[in-house]
Picture 1 (cartoon, helix red, strand yellow):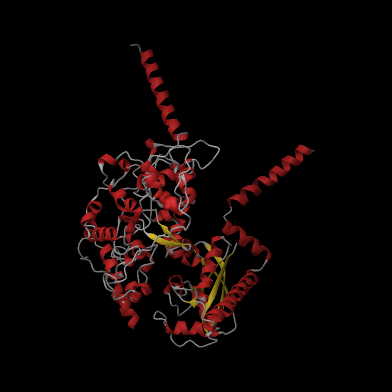
Picture 2 (tube, each protein chain N blue to C red):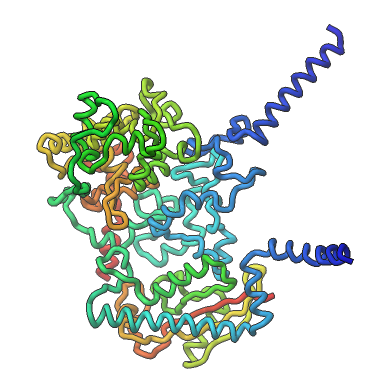
Length: 198
Length: 423
């Protein structure tokens, strides 16, 4: 009886062992997430964390220690400035880069139809559609599916609204910005979250 | 001889050859007969240590490159990090050029396709993603794609001294800065030692050398180096690891550069005889460790910064150093006991840099040469304008003459950056 149980458990465990080892980290996490949480819910939750973190940085670090107390210098080239600190949009990207090092199984990016760096312009048809949608429909998010390479993704686009004067001042004055008329509360771009589908 | 005897001879030779080759392939750490082709100038020192890059089955280790080069990429604020290309939105870029993998551009054992910086791709690779740059920048119209990184304007990884705001900040400076100055080394303030703690009478010359150096001033006595462990006997020879105990940053740099990477890989020390650059014949068998440049007991940094290098190096750039204005000022500094304008070999190749809040001498001699624009911030800008530095580093003949004369190359990037700023 004991031997039978052992053999049976081996038979069950071996393929499990192999599948869990051979699966890349990228594929294993989202499959589990998609099984238990609808991708739309998952993306909404991720965006809530991203937005909350960046807003906390903007209001309680940049605005307080930068604009009010002048203790730090928020600047695009912060590494070369004395007391320089990264801008909120850069903080968003640096945090993304660190998160991606852990292979979390999803990707996200900050994009705009009027980007300072042209590499951050929408590129795929879904990104273009999504960014146009959130611009025309204030307060609404965009959800869709797209195939990139040989993989299918759930793609969500969330509006990125100008919340402080620092955002619009920099984007209106920057020599590489295609626009100089951003206003407070306006949609300046969007956060694109992609979750791979099965 | 009978056929049978010939068979025995053949059998013995075959078995011996198989055993020898089999041992080298599967057991021996060094496998000289199995190197498929010449390795790059950055790796040939450790090419016998196959396991530094390869798995036991001779595949390439997942993190073979990153193990040694990740800090350098971080310090250089890598312009094309892997994660930029991991985003599925960039799948079309990856299809053209898989920039997530180092070996897409840097293939080893491929001497016939290897160019500067170990790049094995045709040098117009920038076009794969930046084809439309001519439409975005007026100044870039009609520029050839093999000129992006070769004209002194861009680097694939490290643009810390070449990015637009940096160019504008340093626009219109004088070629020679009035306030040229080297970073002074920090000395630890401790009561200077005068009495050696060796259990025998130290010869007067050694005593004198030691008592006049930073070691005596910093409270380092004989036994600290010759008998660091009181349980072990005195040793005349001091190992690199004993130096490393106090000089961690310096050892790290040494072990990452061409001088120390063999030792760090567990191989015998590097010797000038193994170098690919021109070296003096009588130096061929000298072994490279800490005291080969910092002669023991004296540890004269002025000697280590020039004389030690010229004991071995004999390429044109090195041989022309003593005719250069850099050396002229070095001598003046030496005579006047100042530290203002003199430029030694080390000023450029082992510069003093500020790292995590302290002054460190970068002992990786290659850190400022991959590519040479890396030298701008650590060395050139201490005395020269950015424009002068970029021009000089793009002028191969001037480099060979060890900067005797003025640059004949003019890199236009500063003017282009300035013009865009005005708009």
